[in-house]
Structure formats: structure tokens, C-alpha cells
Image (cartoon, rainbow, N blue to C red; front, side, top):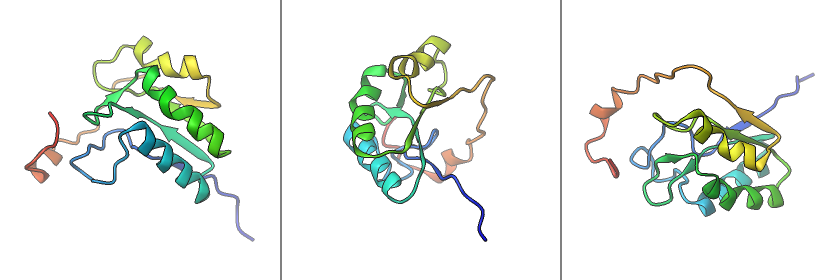
Length: 131
């Protein structure tokens, strides 16, 4: 007898950049398609970060979230989990804005400082697509 499993998928990841993978969804359409695809493949929870469609940089702008959240909600029954992690230097108010506006079923909240220690990646990639 197998145990139940809950699959969560973060389609954009939190620290990934377009340089690291050409498959990283950045635009609202790409994020929607990736999230819906993950739900079709059995992800029960979709953990969502928003990206600036031009640079791939993380953004907490509720307008960007609202370009893909309704599309995802209308096309799958996965639980929507909005990240409030944002990016370095974002205020708590900026990080919470999309979750407060969209009122998703779940939201993650980083309450302390975060140091991913990804500095070795600087040596791995020579041609960064964005600053």
C-alpha cells in the first residue's frame, strides 16, 4: 500500500535566471502554461513567483501576478501558492501586495534573512543574459 503524496511545483523557482535555462518561464503566458502543465502532470500545489517579462528578474508587482493567476485558476484545480519571497531589497509591503490582492489558497512567507549562497554560480556562467 502506498502513502499519499502531495506534489508542489515552483515553475519559475526563486533564484533561477534565464541564463541558467532557456526553459525558465518568464512571461505571464509562459508561467501560465508551465503551471497548468504541472497541474496536468499531478502537481497539487503550484508555488508561484512573478518575473519581469523583459528581464526575468523577480517582481512582486501584483499587476504581473494578475496577468497569470486568473488564467491558471480558470484552467486547473491545483492549489495556488503565491510566494512572498520576492527579491533582495523588497519591503514586506511589496512582498505581500500580490497575496493580499489575489487572496490565494496558500502563500509562503520568508520571515528572516535569506542567504542562498549561490556565489559559485558566478563562475559557472560567462554570458549572463541580464544584469
